[in-house]
Length: 92
Ligand SMILES: [Zn+2]
Ligand SMILES: [Zn+2]
Image 1 (cartoon, rainbow, N blue to C red):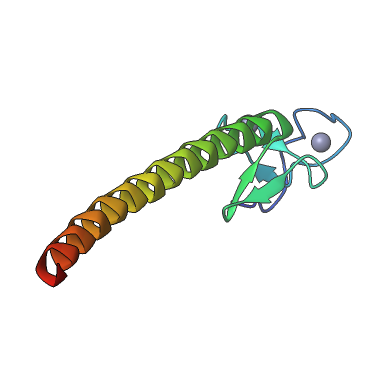
Image 2: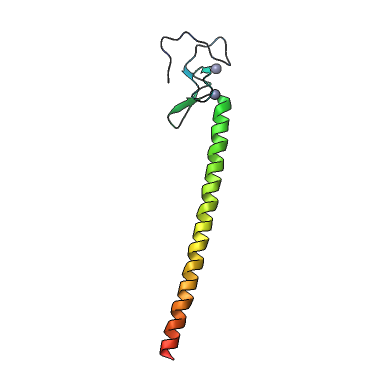
């Protein structure tokens, strides 16, 4: 979200014109304070929070993926053992 015409001033730099509004806290921020993240502008503070939240989400997804892979392998091993057992019982 960009401002035009620029009337507000940056929350962190009183001498700089506001470039965007932080979508998280709504503070007016200048071009050097605004960072585009996921197609939206965030101030420095909120960007750090966004990054931390994204990092947590990635960590959760990673552990879920690991758990799912482990479960799939376990299931496969069980299935393979049952199948081999049936096969051997048939042969001998
Ligand atoms: Zn903010
Ligand atoms: Zn600034």
